[in-house]
Length: 434
Image (cartoon, rainbow, N blue to C red; front, side, top):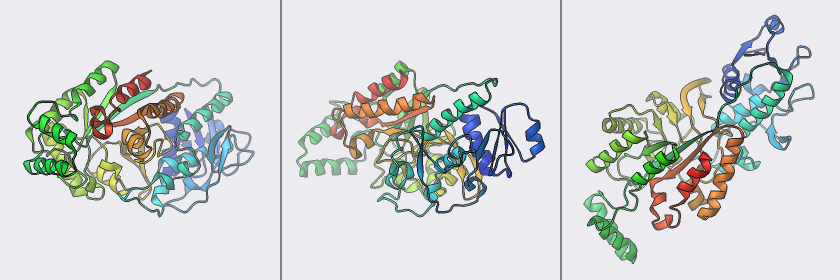
């Protein structure tokens, strides 16, 4: 155990010290405001305050962890052995910046509470983030800082028995459209057929006809393939099913269709299944509740994990709604437009609600890369995409973090905009499990 002395123990201090020391570095931590208790402690210890008590292991504290609410902070980014960092300290401090305040700023998504311009889908954009502006979005800097800090701890306290966590990989699949043509309503099928004819999309017309009359399989029905890869590479796989009512942005098969229900039930037997709340659920707690109950009625099991459709979430409202519904895990923490680490970390973390200044029971699983980001936003080829995926995996592996990818069942279809992308998923699994 490491003992931390500070002049005031706040919820923010408890939260971020436990995340960095206990969850990332696997070092139990305790806190004290009593100088005599700190001096008497024989094991590893550090002081986190404005001035050192003596010659102890000292980190000069920034004000951030002693404040409440949010303020517009002027941040200057420096370098610590070629790693970007901010909240600089002084020469008496064991490291040149306040690792705990900087980590809290990123992981709490502090900047997303500040006034900002949302994109067309009402989302906070990567371009407004500190990580994007300063060029470290594709590095899990919080974990990099933690491991560099660990090396300094080992030098200071060489007799302590340190343990190291292991690298982990999770494959997640969003099911926005379980089928391209099968099981759609008559109105949607006829409308889609006429639309393809008017636009002279003969290839689509033929495929729609062939699937409807069972001449060929539906191109988006790649679930058996996905399960085969799950077993072959022995990877944890989570399917997030969209079961909201039909809207312009929610175009999946109706959840009332028996064939769709059977698909979901089959997936529950072989993999983890979570909720993919519909487009308009971001700020509508009643809609979120309705869809959660709908999925639970199909699976006959409680829904514990979730990822917002279009990655539409607003802090802290959306997360508060998930907590109210006793959802335990959220997988929305990433950007649609950019790959990388939205919260600066590749370690799952508990959501800290700055409105109420508490650590919540909602565990956030940040993903590093999404297939549509690579294809639709970055306009990369599958080969270029694989290079990006390899780089991100290497960053995560270097800090024994959790590498999480986001694909869609459509990506394996080799159809329409996914032509030529079929092999990327398996290639990703090979890289991620190597």
